[in-house]
Amino acid sequence: MSLPKNSPLRDEQSGLSPETRYPLNAIPAVKTSRKRNRSWLWLITLLAVAGTGYWFWNQYSAGPAASAKATQPVIRGDIDNGVTAVGKLEAVKSVDVGAQVSGQLKTLYVQIGDMVAQNQLIAEIDPAPIEHKLEIDEAELAMLEAQRIAKKAQLALKQTNIDRQHTLVAARSMAQSSLDQAVADLATAQADVDAIEAQIRKQQATLDSDKVDLGYTKIYAPISGTIVANPAKQGQTLNANQTTPTIVTVADLSTMVVKAQVSEADIGKLKLGMQAYFTLIGESGKRFPGTLRQIQPMPSTDNNVVLYYALFDVPNRNGELMMSMSAQVFFVKAAAAGVLLIPASALHPVAGKPGEAQVFVANQNGSIETRHVDVGIRNRVNVEIKDGLREGEAVVVNDDGKTKRASDTHSSPLF
Image 1 (cartoon, rainbow, N blue to C red):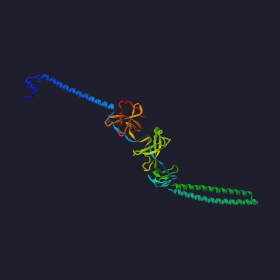
Image 2 (image 1 turned 120 degrees about the vertical axis):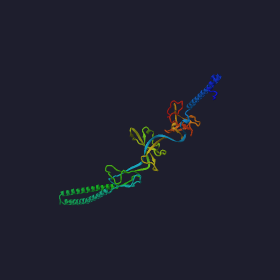
Image 3 (image 1 turned 90 degrees about the vertical axis):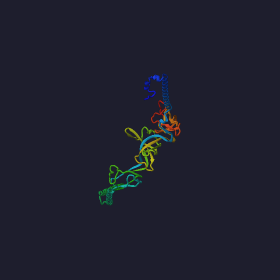
Image 4 (image 1 turned 30 degrees about the vertical axis):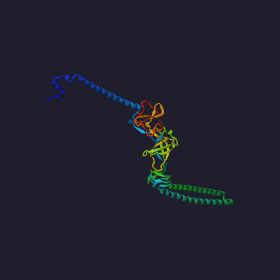
């Protein structure tokens, strides 16, 4: 069996030592080669560390990387700033139509949602009790009229008697006392006539009042509008002696009023005549404009929170606005249309310079550039840029509040 040339077994068989087989002058060459390899490894490692450190230093000294931050383009649009509030929609004109006489609601001609015209018959109370009362009034009046005729006949008789008494007394055919009695009887007859005529006037007034009540059994719409409520039901007995029961509520929905609740901290910022608008929960993108016409002086207090009502009217031609809708209201202090806009989170104040601001612009090569900008109108969402940016440029959005220059150690308020 033959062994490999460099096998230790072969060396032992041949009697040669490793030193004899591998000369001493060949060993240093192997060690030198290993040292050179280690030097290259250390050099490569140092270069990698230095490159990484330089990259981090370059990134932090120049600003945040565009790829590491969210950006938004500079756009052109509309912006406004003002006071926000919440409110409710109500009809400008709304009338509770009630019953002025007691009785059973015999017929209700309308229901909720119906459109009615002014003076349209909408309900009727059973007129039978009042009609019977009218018959009694007319009978009593007729009886009084008959009594007045009798009293006047008595008065005429007394007048004739007194004339006769005057003739007899003048002829000394009758005593003066008889004439005096005739005069007293005439006065009594005249008083009876006056009393019966007073009773007739009273009964006539009662009759007229009952006729008015009979008219009240037919209930007409006081205004043109929409039936928005009908608390009373057909067949219900209404008692108008103590309170006026409401049968229906008619509202003119062609114009709505917005009653906005404004906090006492913001009410001083509102001025009559300023522009306002509101949005609805289901149509947040649609604005309904109006003009502030009234600030009610008496506030409402809820849990020690003082709120004032600010009112403005809006047309409702299409009928899309309804009673008690919730509205997000905006009273406009300043507005601009077709201006450059950036998100408010992209704007940064300049330390030690109130009123100045800067933004970080992401260039196409990935670097970040700091720009000083001239700011116009701003709100909680957007900021108007008057100078310093162009439409379409990308600005870094400061979502986490950490996007700032490395030299900035504190910030000052912008306004």
